[in-house]
Length: 256
Image (cartoon, rainbow, N blue to C red; front, side, top):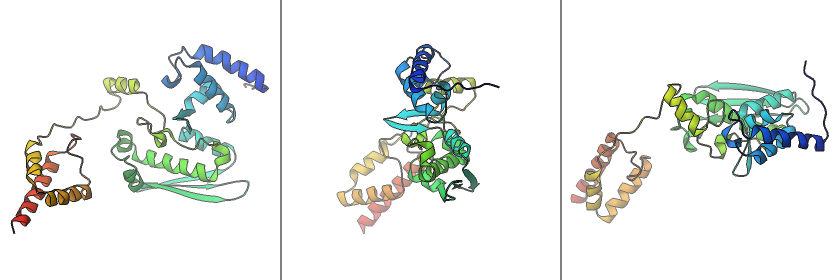
């Protein structure tokens, strides 16, 4: 059995400094920390509050745009390690996380649904398409931890994705871009499908021919239908057909 040796602050800092100097040149640590010994030191010092060694801290803890972030698995582990309980349920398009504190018996229930994900602009992301239930679960967990267990997560109750990180896996872990390319090449994950280029010249000409009032009406309809913008290159052939049909309908109404 391994026995952890108690250290004072000075001894711990000196140890982390030595570890950071050696680990910074390692290729097996997260890329966010490679060649950055100062960041490793910061993670190591922050991780001590959670009882982590330097390697655990780098794996579970990130600072994104100045805000602390933690893998949701780590949040859940810390909460349960502290003696609190969390019950998770995924039903249809919604995840529910219910927590109870062992010390005060306070309870709280947090929910996150696909509708919430849609409002937040998440549903088109690859991880949400592939791991919808898991992503809903971890969002509900992070909300619960911030509300009911702030003394456990200590201000790091956000998953990386909540702070703008685009690439995370079903466990809420940041995926490096290089790793994703390698995984795609190896066939581990599917590369994103390239959308076919849709011809929009006719559509642009029809829009230019509209009078100002009809153009305003088309703009409102476009917004209501939640269609991609004309310059985004994300319109499908079906979208273009629908828009042209709407334009012709406006022109017919104008004729009367």
